Length: 390
Length: 208
Image (tube, rainbow over all chains, first blue to last red; front, side, top):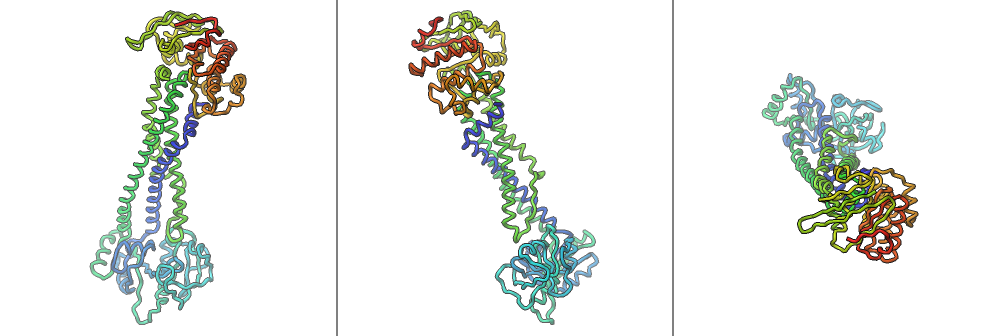
């Protein structure tokens, strides 16, 4: 039996201590790793869905709410704005493209968004089956919508007013599915798209009233417009303009404070796990000092005893760290399968991400530090004294 | 051949010991009797090279302990000397046969599982080969510790009060076993004890 194997046997021999140390280490590493993965995923999602949208114009209110509702489709609309006012902005020479959006209705938890064909091009959405809408009340659905509700080309359904299940059903007009989109990993997978005139007609407005939309996405010809146009809109019209890039950076920074404090707690847990490794080694050495003396008498060198203790500490810390990394991936898997119905968390990496590389060396270092004093004790095992005391 | 001149050793000014000279040939045994507190364990440790004498020298097969560095002494002891204690010790987390194999490996000797099994069977522990050492009875533990000592076929076996905690019956068994195993592996055997029961069983006796 090698020293390496003997270390392992010693750990298995005192399962409670071993489990406690492993648990603490894997919790610490697991939480940090989970935060890293979630943070990365959030940034990735923000980037994926932002596409080339430079500015969003909608009704006055919270700029963040406007962005979250119009770009990410995870908040309520801020209100309606007249289509005319957007058409006026369209004439500005800095504006490259304007995509009108009408939303606020849903079907069984998925949002119905009225827009133009430009919306497909913005997300490079590809038709998997069928075609884009041509007439009124024709819809193209995202891949998740099709999968969840098993919708097929030719199916009809009624929209529900509001974004929650159980609202008023607009049963005057039925939508007709004419196309299904490929999976894209963006928010469009969870949307039901139609012509924005249809959304207006569903709400049964008489022809005389001025047509309204919910928001409009703007693409600029020139980045310099990012500074100029939003301010101009906010100051000279009763519309609200918001820049998604700014708002999302602000949001990420706000969340970052929370992430940092949780990360701090996780680091503390990792250190406590080091302490637990130290205490369990220290105690087991106290119990095992005759064992070590025996090994020395039988010809084991001081360094073999040192290796024995070091291996035990490193086993605990590295195994704990690996368990932690597995734990974070397991929780991500569970989280994403729980929320995937209405949210936008999709695919997570099972391999190590760059930000996690420091976790293993840190665990190793904690293990080495925890074993420092016990190692010294093992090195100094005083055979004559121990055997006389016996 | 084990040879020692009169050796002296002191822990401090109050506790100093002088031990008589010893000369022991292969396969010979020797009983050293002495009362408690007379330095029996100290003598054993001097003979094992675990302590260094203040005066005098000890050599085993022509190798003088004083010529060896501590590390070399460890290696030398691992190869050539075995100790049996009053209280038997084992590595708790592994079973009996693994204890034997591990000590063989640690001392740099050939690891032969079949031979160790045979030894344990011969010693009367055939049904305990894969038992945890803490599950053995006291008598069995002492027998197992003799197996630990003789499995590497050492040149010298030093036994420190091996029978002190045993009843008469087990005492007989253990001493017979020690003598028999020492003969088999051609080892010199020194038993150091205050146990007067052993007196009749040895020809060579020294009283401290």
